[in-house]
Amino acid sequence: MKPFAFSIVPVDVPCVKTEYRCIQTAIPVPQSLPIIEKITRYESRSMHGQMPVVWGRAKDLQVFDHWGNIWIDFTSTIFVTNAGHANEKILNALRGVLDQELLHTYTYASKIRASFLEKLVNCAPASLGKAYLVSAGTEATEMVLKLIRLNAMKNKKRRPGIIAFDGSFHGRTMGAAQISGHDAQREWIGYDDPNIFRLQFPFGWDDKFNDLSVDGQVQFERDLEALRARGIDLENDVGGIVFESYIGWAAAFYPKEYVQAWAAFAKTNGILLAFDEIQAGFGRTGTMFAYEHYDVEADLISCGKGLSSSLPLAAVIGRAEIMDLPDEGSMSSTHSANPMSCAAGLANLEVFEEMNLVEESKRKGKILKDIVKRLQKKYSDRIAQAPTQGMVTAILLCDPVTREADGLSASLICEAALRKGLILVHTGRESIKIGPPLTIPDEALIEGMEVLEECMDEVFGSICEHSSH
Image 1 (cartoon, rainbow, N blue to C red):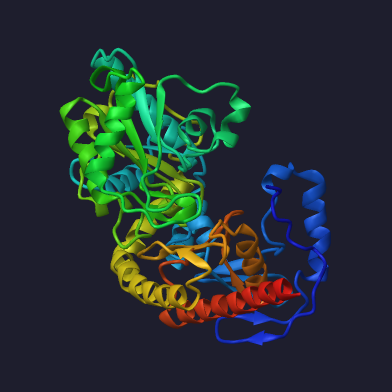
Image 2 (image 1 turned 45 degrees about the horizontal axis):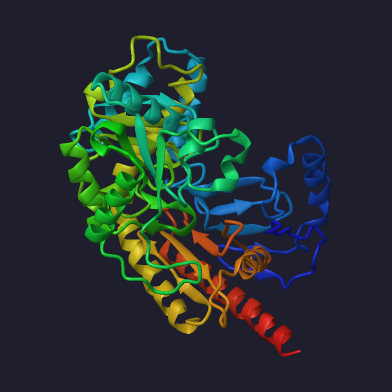
């Protein structure tokens, strides 16, 4: 399907003025078009496709352009700014590093790196004793794969196999793409790694969103049987299993019993259990890490995005004996642990404690879930599913007659919301993702959801009117 193209023709829209939103120009802003055109001219199109809004600054839950417009941000810039945009404590920490004139250290030691590592490891479950810092989530994924395979070699496994899941997304570098579950996104590689074994994501719907009852233990046993039927000796051919803690585009969790069954099997058979927390971690789901909802112990977790609420920073946190498998100097990165990112990460974790953001995510998540349930009831023929946990939800739209996925309506709703002062996560498919900063006031969360409802009314009404003609 051809990607949806947002219009760059300015549209006169009603003025909006509330405590949290202000729209006072045509959208997109006519004066912003030269900037958009310059980016289109000089930058690879792979970076394009977002809604036509030029950011001027962002503060807490709001995005400001250069022409007086203000939006409520329901994206946290793709789940990064969990502690709010330009959090004052994080800004002060960055100013302190600038004043110190220490912007880069490679892998040489620094005080801020030592303090951040201590804080990071102490915020993780007690079984995870060491961390490794990098710049981006996909780098963290690559390190998880390396550690799994080093451990398989150490334990003299016959193959360094890794179990992964269809529908998942772990990053854009080669290893991360190999374990991601979208065939089209792996075509550029030219081959599939024969030691990566993919399973279908066991979530409760099929292509037309029919409700399916999924028993986690039964599905686990079926998957074991299917892997063995492919000639895979699970005890000797598998070194690790990697779960995306929830499937990103759909905010969909695995059945709890399914993950627990794999965790027990992994522990018995020398298989490492890894969770991709890059989008899901740091309070987003009402726990510090989303995998905690499964009540299992992880061997490795990859983190990013909300780890700093600002600058590029990612990490692998794991059991100490696994983290120490690589030889000295064999696993490092040019910008690993740079002082600016470490300062941001440390301040971010301190903000989480001071503002009690994990509990706030859980509390506000109940408000969000109640509103989503009401929307599901109101649009029962249009909303197929709406998984919600803490401060993340994905509203999955379907055709009211065929029940097939409806990506067009999702895109049109995102476009309509932009014109009213609300920025939603545009996934490019049938889901509308919602993930505001965890600091958002209750009133702003409710106002944003009211705007979303207005947009649904308009788009669904327009489609019905068009169909009747």
